[in-house]
Length: 592
Ligand code: AGP
Image 1 (spheres, rainbow, N blue to C red):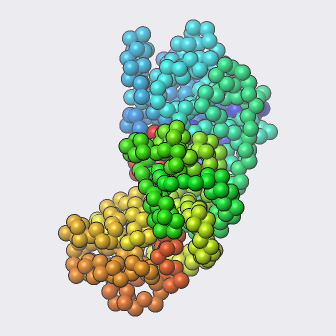
Image 2: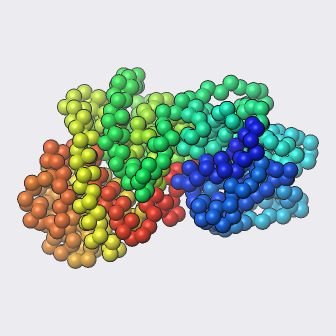
Image 3: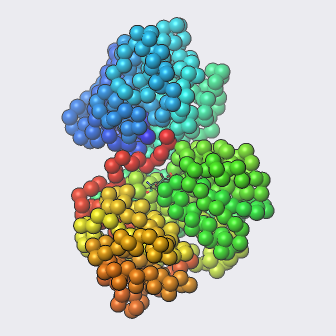
């Protein structure tokens, strides 16, 4: 997955600093290589492997001249990260430059055909076939717009691309299929990009081109054409995110800033109550719910299942999006399929959504306004977490949970549950005040190679999420288990060197979880418990306890008990000297 940007300035000749600024804002989408191309009498390209700032210090992107250009930040999918594979890619004659986000499934066949025609390739990427094809079609007499169109007809797979040609200077053509793309404009120029944070400083009105639409940018205008070349009138939407929200704002990393923003994310998402009620009324009767999601959003879905089944008695399934096809055959008109995704762009979830639309009612719970899934699902709820830049999902997860709790509470007409949500921001703030304590605890954990997270019932998804957060940013192997499963295998791995994090809020499952805690204690594990303040029994049986307000019982624990686990992962990672915002091999949005 990668980030792409294109920009044309109406008068000014200094597009490079703007492109650089925009691409820096997309670094969360990929950070193994960066490149820019600008037009100034000919196409100039600078690119290299490495993160954006490091490469810039070496090759000084901002010195490039021209009023029109494209930029790319890469997260390698086809071809290793190196200079040759960095974008932009050119054709043999250096007259076409292209940046691409997505994966082409038929590039090897296309490449073979092109090689037979005498084309030479410099990279091992799938992208490089695109400029070669565009050049062929321009040689046949097509203009850039039609050459890009014809090229797209040959591509199989996913793509968002921006192309420029030295034969049509100061023009950019962009289009997409199954990969995100937005456009924006202000008094100085026109922008195209993979995502909103790139353009927030320039404009908050954006349009997301639909599949089959083409963006034509010149110094005079930005137009959207349909497949037949007919101009269409795009409906821009206003993005309610301030540029400040997408900046670190004095924090060392985005992740810690985003952890601190969680109480606000809950408060803001609670404002969606009326919308959610309206959606529930419109959906009407349903006999079954199926949640579909990936990663952290999958963990939010498990909480959704436990809530809806326990509060309303509607049977629920939770499916990992990439595994949807087996269950899809059981979806029917009485099934509501709920898609949970912070980005609204995750490829696997979108493919499942396409399938679900054929048979069932579909609802997407997403954080990014106007993202693909908001357009593709029948109903959508927008969580109000604001932009999340750190690769590890934190505030968007808590916001997803808030929306799910509202949905379940309203569906079950459980006013007491909804009432409880109002105090969640306060509980979260109380935990954030214990940040220093958790930072101190993290110093004892940076030696660990493995960690186990245990929880029962509503605490089981907390355990899964705690373990995912630790492993994805600190690279410590961590497993989340339903506490009762421990004795069915993993107990064999517990010894005096293994940290076990036990999530044990007050509630129905407390006693049974305490038995599990005793089981690991007997194996001398290093026990860190997250439990209620004043729980003496827990203190006696744990090495360390992080204390939470005792009003937080099991049913709302996911919204609160997750927070100390996020802080723990963050500080363990920082203590180990890693960047929590940019874990290796991972990117924020998985559109492939
Ligand atoms: C979470 O920390 C991860 N980076 C990842 O698991 C993420 O939740 C997953 O890729 C799903 O993304 P989505 O919510 O945007 O669909």
